[in-house]
Length: 434
Image (tube, rainbow, N blue to C red; front, side, top):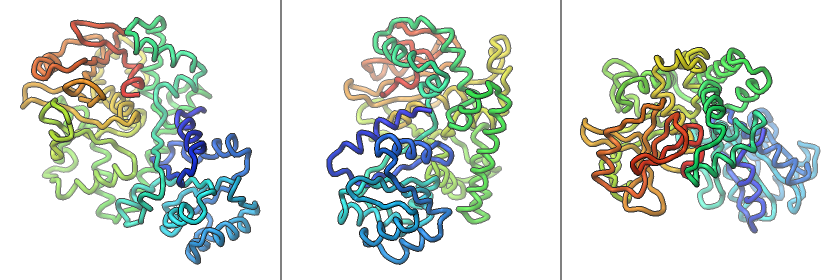
């Protein structure tokens, strides 16, 4: 399956004097597959992959020495493939298993800059932020691979040609001619999500039940990771926090509340669990801003935030959302999908590198997302609706107070404009902030 990040990998390779590349991302988002494909296509199969989690000999090589010439000689011997600094790609996979290997990136950059080096790790963020590993700041370039977005999902289903046409409708505001068909794909994506294995299963079988088995296996793997990389007490708190997210997003007010994690829960107890989940790439945090005036960062209230799952399909699975609840239009109108749809939009906004923020005015108004764009005098408000009922007092309050250059409303309606508000169908969320 094609991934959008491949373009950025190619750009990295073409950049003169490129630094070693460090790829972050949650487990099972497809880092190893993507980097293997990149190596095969861009380096004509001239690459060496070292799995530092499985290969104890490779870990020992880094423990003994960090001199690049010695490292590539010994790694060549272990792999059985000669590493040519001028032509070979060295791929250090599961680098979170070796702090010394992580440190070696600095020396590759300083002493052997001609060698192309990429590194990835499923819990690399946890190793760096939670376990004291040292990332070579200033000596590496970083990228984060997130779950597949809706555009990649559509492409995997063989309809990739429609993606650019959706982008064109987003730019022009003209109605998309296959609106109903793409809405159907959107509801499918809400159930399947963007974990590559889940998408591959859906492409293969078309069975939501089979997809759910894959999703629960991934959830079990995440749960095991929590136990592997945290103390027993921390593990319990991390799991409780993770398990509370469906309930957090089912409330009318989606602000994260520690008391929903555990009766009497406090930030002093559970805030570290949120930090762990953020480091692992399993969740995204959306911070409240008290004003829509620019710059938005000046108005952030770090104590008030929402927490979304990194993959909407996993949220649907954890919420026990069934196929008939989503794909049957008659039943769907009675199902509470607001939090799950909002999670989907959050997933796509942050995938485009836009910080997640929301706005409230006391207890009287709330706008789901506010984005700081290149132009304009105020943050762009984004309202999310899970149906075609698009009435919104909060959006009117925000516009009246801050007079933003534009306002977006995502819903099941087609592209268009209504009283100065841009109507964007939910399936086009991947266009926001591109």
